[in-house]
Length: 507
Image 1 (spheres, helix red, strand yellow):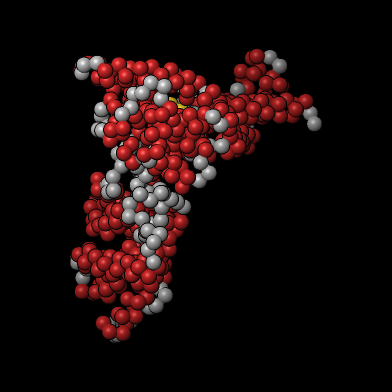
Image 2 (cartoon, rainbow, N blue to C red):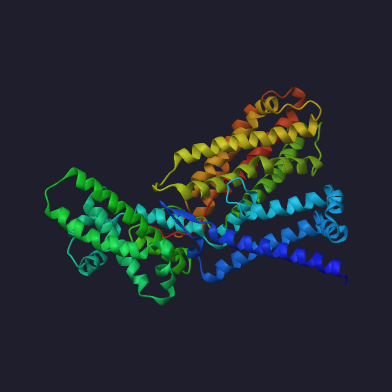
């Protein structure tokens, strides 16, 4: 091995090491916003799981840098030029596109690894690995549930336990049932959160949480002791508006710090998601929100329902067409048209439904108030589904048949009728996500409910499709019949498949 090759390898390894180090620093920089305070994601998972995530990200960045500078835009010509030029003049004369561009690309790649910006594409990859290994979304959901918890939902024994542990008696039995905007209720809420955190503080496995400066356990203890005396003084004094408002703000700040620390402890210390929400419910948190498990399985189920519905619907429609309507103009069974319809239906229906799952996850991360139904969200996903399905229909059909004279806006307007059914289905799927199947429901009831959904949505699809195909000519009657018949089975199966199980503790 020549000296030149050894130096080239050394430069390569130095750059790869720099990429690994910058990726390591970047991975640890990201913080999850819980309330007004940022929190490191490493406190949302087991240490081993977190290190698997950081190793995966650093290894991936190092591999990408190696491929970039060894195969795609090799630094070898630049290293060779530097070693062989001898003089600065020869070096400057030898610089060109093949030597400068790889150096610029390598520098930009290293810069992007360390660059904290929403416009940085590498941060999207980093955040995705964070979400896979650090479980920040669960901590955000737990935090929101704790912030909005109602103390009237907790056990009476727990209320008495909290009161007995106070050094200065500052809670009355009725404080737990008062309005959430009162000083009495907010202080009772803080006492409950602090009492639960103390149970974790006595366990050695959680010691690193209380030693971490960013989680502010020391500040919490000082504020809690000071607040106890302030509440006693406030209760004994005459009502004063300015002092009450100031005390409420201080209590809200303390509540945010307590919920942030407790959310991290609950997520870290729970063996399963069911255990997480059982703990939250014990603290009075509203856990009615559905947490879907294995989302990809539902996407696959809807895809299968679409494909089977399109194939089954067309073949049955062709049979009815040949037997009763136009026996003198028979249509071919198992024609290539069936596969084309399946390929067309999947992006028209499944892509919007997949976006419903993504939108629901993003929306529920940010919402605080819990509700049985989110009708604004249902309307939003219907609009989103309409836009996406109509756009997909315009792009697929127009680019397939009218490649030369394609205008997206005109095609979108012409294909708006084909986006109605997918939009309605998106709204229904979002609605069904908040109507989970009860474990007490018998299989027979589930089957009957699925059949009723199949018939109902089949009839809806017939009405919509008769409108959508109303401009077809008499010569296209056979096509119109098969389209309506296929839609009946396909949309009916999608409606029947819209049944969800959730990972939550029932109220």
